[in-house]
Length: 166
Ligand SMILES: [Zn+2]
Image (cartoon, rainbow, N blue to C red; front, side):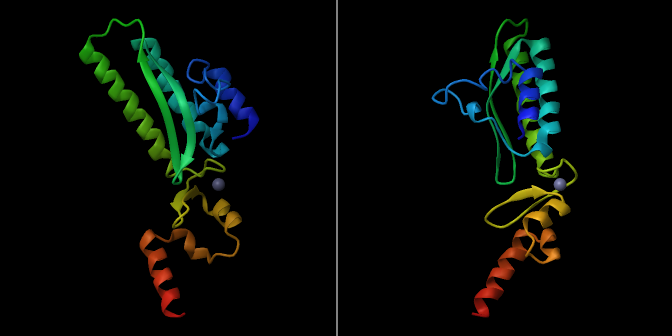
C-alpha cells in the first residue's frame, strides 16, 4: 500500500494501528499494510466499525497484521475488553460481531481489485490474485483473454491437456 494511504489509516485509527511502528519481535504490523491500494476502502470501512464498537462497548481492537494471502485480505487482530458495562454474555456477542465484520472485510476483498478497488475476481491456480479485468491483463500480458474467467477446474483441465500433448 502506498505511503499516503498507510499514513492516513494510522492517523485516522491510531488505537487500531498503535503497533504500526512497534518492534518486529512483538508485531507483524511493523511491515505495514501488505496489500494493494485497492483494498484501502475495505480496511477503512472495517476500522470505522471497529472504532464505533470500541466506543460503545469498551472492547478495543489492535491490528497485528494486515496482508494479502491466497488473493484475499487477512486482517489479523487482538480484541481486548477494557472498562465495560457489558455482561459476559454481551461481551461474547460483541466479540462475535468483531469476528463477523472482519470476515466480511475478507470476503469483500475477494470481489474487489487489489490494485484499483473496482469489481474484481479471484483468479489463478497456484498463485491467486483478486484483480479487475484490466489489471489482470496488465499483469498477465501473455495469457489468453478468456483465462481471466477460468475456474480452478479450467486450470486443472489445461494442465492435463498440456501433459497429454507432451
Ligand atoms: Zn483494477
